[in-house]
Image 1 (cartoon, helix red, strand yellow):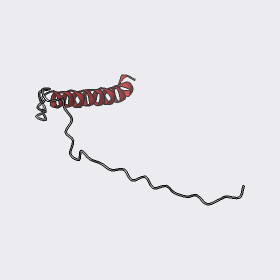
Image 2 (cartoon, helix red, strand yellow):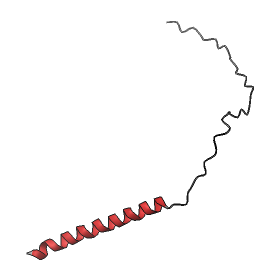
Image 3 (cartoon, rainbow, N blue to C red):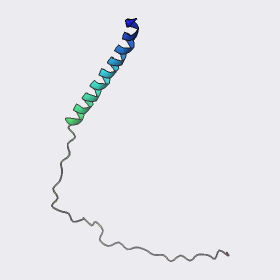
Image 4 (tube, helix red, strand yellow):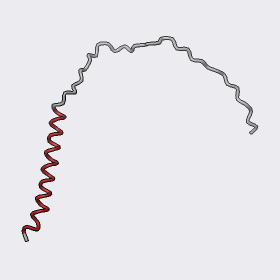
Length: 68
């Protein structure tokens, strides 16, 4: 009678321990990852303008009468 409940319980325990170990490894990899970004200093805040003169063409379109 006790052995009937032992197998599903041990399977659940094994699955729970496996998933917990994978989550712990994932957090350790996230903590000690080597993808560190270097933050630049906030000295120069002026925007860089590549093309200072931009001419916008405004074409006057003539619309045909719709008749409504």
